[in-house]
Amino acid sequence: MAFEKDFMIFSGTANKPLAEKVATYLGHPLNKIDIRHFPDGETFCQVQEGVRGRDVFIIQSGSPQPNEAYMELFVMMDAMKRGSAARITAVLPYYGYARQDRKDMPRVPITARLVANLLTTAGADRVLTMDLHANQIQGFFNIPLDHLKAEPVILKYIRDQNWSNPIVVAPDTGGAKTAYGYSRKLGCGLAIVAKQRTGDSTVDAFSVVGDVKGCDVIMIDDMTATGGTLSAAAKMCRDSGARSVHAFVSHFPLTAKGEERLMNESQLDELVVTDSIPLRTGFDPAKLPFKLTQLSVAPLIGEAIKRIHLDESVNDLFVRE
Image 1 (cartoon, rainbow, N blue to C red):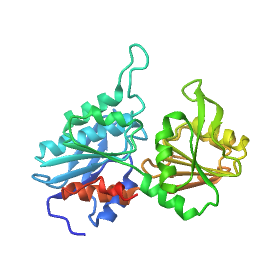
Image 2 (cartoon, rainbow, N blue to C red):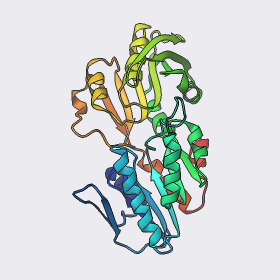
Image 3 (cartoon, helix red, strand yellow):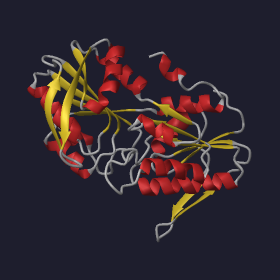
């Protein structure tokens, strides 16, 4: 794959393994940057190659440790801007703070909008991200934003399984539209788990709208951190006679509480995640009572980067599905 000489790709420290896979897909090694953290916690970076007049892409997931990840990204972009880069694209496989996208209580911030403002101020000319928690976050930006979906990667995996009686299930009503899209593309039925959230990490699921008896459940969600929604929905599907339950999530910012819940409470047969976020440090998938599968979105991100650089359509990646 040939790229013009003005293309450069850098990585922060949040998810360097994914960045390296993207670079391999593009046939373009990661460009050199020195990132250090001083003893008092301050972040320092020095770009070790000239970026003047170049089309620069910086890959940095907003998890784990979103505060550190974002500060690192801001510092990197400022260095690129002061080095006279022609264009800076912030590549965020996972957009941290996406769940704080509205003012649902008095005197709370809309932090997803704040992050959008900070990205622009720090020097981003455009943003490339994947599976935002809420589509309206795209409207928080006054610069171009390309919104990828992990759907092509997930659909390919599902089709390769050849389940005999699949049904797509939304684990909550908010995911109904996404689940409906999957059901149309897979040519199978749709069900929805109605839930009531009782706290930040606790969920009471109380009914399944649709018939999942004897079915292989394909549960679709954008992310799971504490495992509450997936565990409650999986139990409800099992109680309703599902033959198997396979959950698919784009982002996996697993917490310690989530690991404990998945270990002890989940009735899943399989959890399929992408590598938009590295697996939690110390987390051992082999200890889970079900199968954990990780799919790579590196080719998807790499192809999007190539198309942005060559001024080609990114939307064409999805219209064929």
